[in-house]
Image 1 (cartoon, one colour):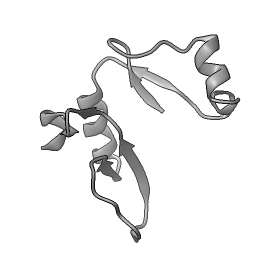
Image 2 (image 1 turned 45 degrees about the horizontal axis):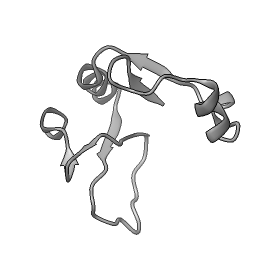
Image 3 (image 1 turned 180 degrees about the vertical axis):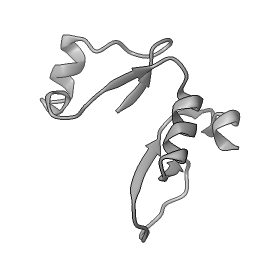
Image 4 (image 1 turned 60 degrees about the vertical axis):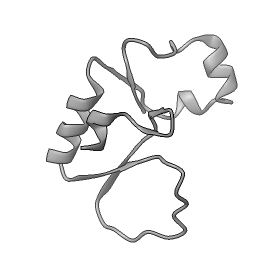
Length: 82
């Protein structure tokens, strides 16, 4: 899980309890710039998918996947959409 250092929830006891222990098993990275991190993932051959209101019932690909869940209003932030 990649979360921004600013304007995002801190990893607290409440977050850990709400995650029902998942936070203990999933790596979490806090980054200064999410857009730059996405660019680095692209260069490392990750498929980048963004959340929206479209339901995908099946998807076939090979390689690594990064799912971006940063909704603003009804879609992903403009810079991440490019």
